[in-house]
Image 1 (cartoon, rainbow over the protein chains, first blue to last red):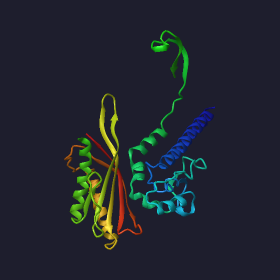
Image 2 (image 1 turned 180 degrees about the vertical axis):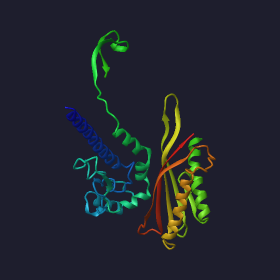
Image 3 (image 1 turned 90 degrees about the vertical axis):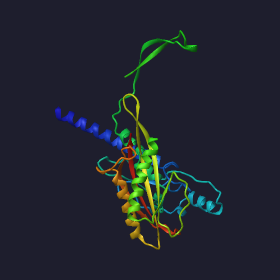
Image 4 (image 1 turned 30 degrees about the vertical axis):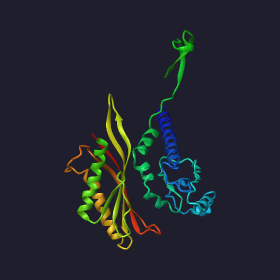
Length: 170
Length: 142
């Protein structure tokens, strides 16, 4: 009996860790795919963040992927063209990852290494935002349940004097 | 003024270390207007980004700055990457100097740098310079 309780707790903890881990991965990918955290010209780089259990190979050429190939051509012809499109190609991740394995989040765009010069990615990865995300992801979550178990009387505006059900947060 | 002090602490630490290693390297800071140096010049562009300014303990908020420092080291391709490496080492020494026990906290900001990433060397086509990217997180308190 004691063993099965042990197992039950272990399963619950593992499920919680797995869920938190995958939520964190998805959140990081979603945030990276924004103009604030990725340098944007056509939007191909910001759209190419990918999660995998091995390091991401930066091999995708913008010329091979629509609509970015067209955007690049149009921008080359017209320097005043501000057009870009961020449409994450690998989000949401196609599978759930085990928290026991290392997951790499990298960029599949061929020229991704050059984006480091800009610094937006480092500001996100090494800055306090990432630390906060990790802390949030693995924070204990209590269920948010409010129970309507008391009577209240309104005191302001149109609710003044009216009786309503008051809720207590558990 | 503590925001200014925090920035000054890191900028001075790096600038002093770089000047000691190679006095011909120009320092450019993101908070000061600058023109990009010529094709033959060695220079460093230092960017400090603040991502957090306070922590909320019990009672009043306390100043606590956190963010990232990025130093892009630019060296003409004609000089070679060995110089890029030596300047990068000076930058890293400057950054880590604030963590040493003998550091004199002139700006009263208790600066600290976290793990330093880089120098990541970039050889970008059609550019006259090699680029080395060094970045780290930092904290500073009052």
